Image 1 (cartoon, rainbow, N blue to C red):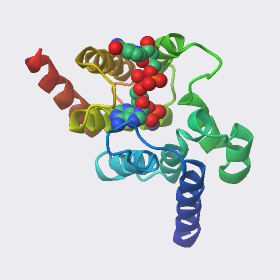
Image 2: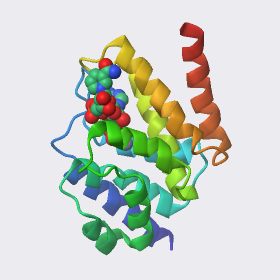
Image 3: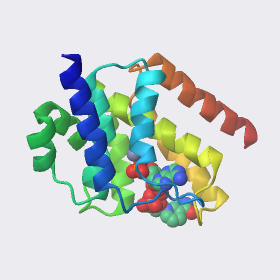
Length: 180
Ligand code: NDP
Ligand code: ZN
């Protein structure tokens, strides 16, 4: 029912807000980290026209395991197996070195489920817009350039998933190419 879905969505936003409460984004304003997962879910609804609550809940939770003490078991118990599996698909293995994680994101993109690809597209769109808005603290122009290049490679593995999100991403990449 509507009431049950609303209850789950609010429980999820609250859960993510508590988990990310001490974290900040890498921008100079030190934006609260929770703005990011909420913004990713908002992109999916408003721009991707996605209204599947499983995808929206997974988007809200997508960085909890990677960046906080949250476990997959916790997510599975509270939000169910389907949500948990999507979060698993978009979570880097923290035991691996950073360069290897970046390489694996490109390699694994192709094998992701449709729902995990949606979360990945919205996540990258949010982060690229964030960087366009203000360059993260301490990043050189070259690092920004490398980040755009890597993001494009990940996104190219998530194509034919959502027309609107891919169009927005392509507009961002087209802007940058013309700057180089
Ligand atoms: P990233 O370089 O991948 O940092 C970007 C990530 O930070 C985003 O994907 C996003 O992830 C998160 N983030 C937080 N705040 C912002 C923001 N305001 N705008 C955009 N993204 C934000 O990860 P690390 O900082 O962990 O650096 C590791 C990698 O960077 C290594 O591969 C290393 O080799 C490379 N590196 C490159 C350098 C260079 O000059 N080229 C220099 C140093 C490192 P999320 O969605 O999870 O929040
Ligand atoms: Zn993210």
